[in-house]
Image (cartoon, rainbow, N blue to C red):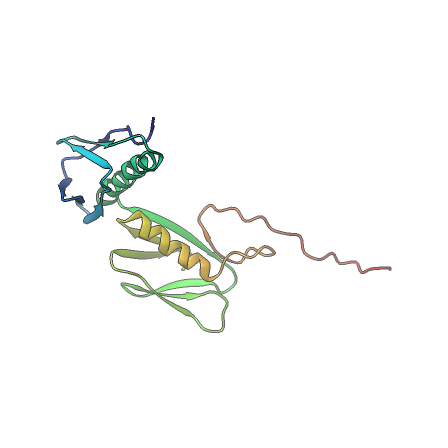
Length: 184
């Protein structure tokens, strides 16, 4: 029995839902998202809730049941509130600037700055003199993917902790070399 798949998804009055030929379209105050729903999963849509049901008890269908419910719930949260990932940039001279609406300039200790182009529907905002970068959007998958790509440009290193990390991420630092030499 799927615990997540059996939960109801409650709807606001601001959300418009259209389910036709296996494609679910959800439109809200922040935008519109589309997703193809698998054939093994059925949706029971009313004015105030959505209930996800499965067609059989095969393991594949059970997995799709909970996954589909979570994806639909994330779509509803995205079109109403949106998603945000915050990245901290640590290191001397490390910072981020916004060049235009969809382009970032990242100074991450390399000889040249990195130009990073954001896809449509994703916004960036900097705080704290360019050391805190917030990635915002309505699609949770894309927001997480962009944050992971930016983090991958300069992962936090283990000795001084310099680099790009998620806000609140703990990086365990290693001890450096000891001052004493051998045999003295």
